[in-house]
Length: 635
Image (cartoon, rainbow, N blue to C red; front, side):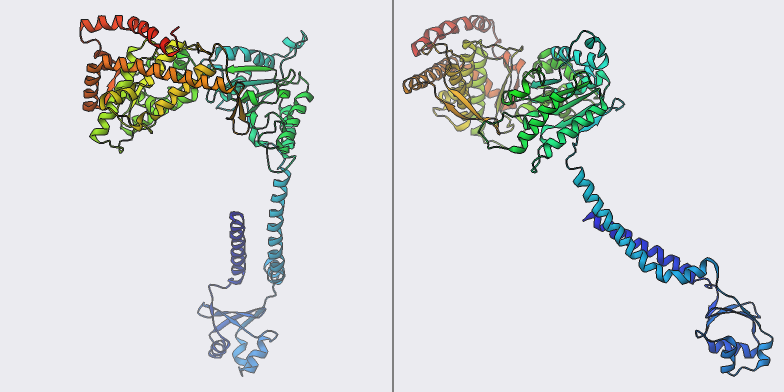
């Protein structure tokens, strides 16, 4: 529709130009007054006319006073016959200078040919626009099978290098060989070494797979072709394969270069799985990728890099030697890497002097690089919203909570009774988590609604951990039940606020029994084989590899773990009821308690300090006595 409208406007403009040209030729005597023949005869008889110039059917009249006039005679009639017909005496005409001027030159030809040319011009204009539309359709049809890969040239301003990628030292070390090959291939070819054709970057979303691929191209100073796996697939069979051929053709012309396929699992899923239906177009595209990777010379200088967060569903043919035979795993950043990533994303942002990026890194375990970038951006947005000139620590801490839990719901106002219940619930989580040695330290308690939660207790580890013991899991489950137990102990009833806690605790207890082999009764083995729905990437079924009797024992083990954790939480809540009441009173007063203030409730006197120092050992001994009675044990 916009194209038709534009063509219509151009057509109207062309007509206006033609009309202007015609009016220019027709207004040659625009300065002369136009009169009729009767007035001309009167002026001739009175002797006012000095000169008459005949130009076709037009009479250009010049009076003795110097004025100029124009009159029109009949076509084919001469001036003499005109004057004779009107009865003008020959004596009146003798003093008038009569000149006959024949039309010639450009104006003559325009006046003669233009009436014939205009129709042809308009018809040609219409045909031109029609052919242009048809040509555009043909071009789009011809380019339908071409790849839409975006090329980043070495001269581009937005190129990145390894210095722009924080952390991932092992991954960058793996890729330095690729950079060295692209810079100096003879170093490898002289020794008969073949650089890998394909490099598969595997990692969780947001860990920097695309950024690392761009950094390889930036370090090697070669062109970078970027395309998503989903861009190959169309509803027409064969288009994806055609785009693959075109992509590799472009890459060979620009060699040496990096060819990067993002989210390759969109076309590289395992063939013949039987789940999710068959997609011939996707399989043909995958086949063409496999053929192309086998077809080009390893010395030509094309490195195919691909990224995925689901390597388990890729077709085995993609992963065999000669294709994506080098796999680089990108882990979530640890505390040191998170600090470096924060420094990179903080460039160009005015940070206040009180901003400690190391502290922020400590409070963001499990954050990916994309999460940290979002965190810095949210802090800047909060600063602008508060009309400040520098991003302060308060904005950064609030940004962490916003990214983790969602924005504050200030319009979600709780009643006094709901506030009190929420305060005891969150206080129960905090106290149980504080008293159990295996639980993470409490960083903040709040009864301000965020996201879907009426309140929250922020518990974060003081250091990154990759392994977790059974005792730590049991303490974590007890801390999850702390809110439920506190409600029951104080009010004699429970609310729906503990539903998510119970869900998480039950799931964790089930994993202890069925996945981690931490059940004393069932022993070190796993139970159940999980199948996944391939096109959704989610668990759909769990195939039982155990009997109904074992299923009953699994349920009993899960129940024992939950009941043991509840008993531990009840004991802590009863022992620390006074501190719980003080914490609740403080929450109802100011709605939020930070870590320093929370710790002060437990260090208000020497006796309590000593009690706190001896508490964990007593608790472990008591837990060891309690849990075996329920079928468990502390390790």
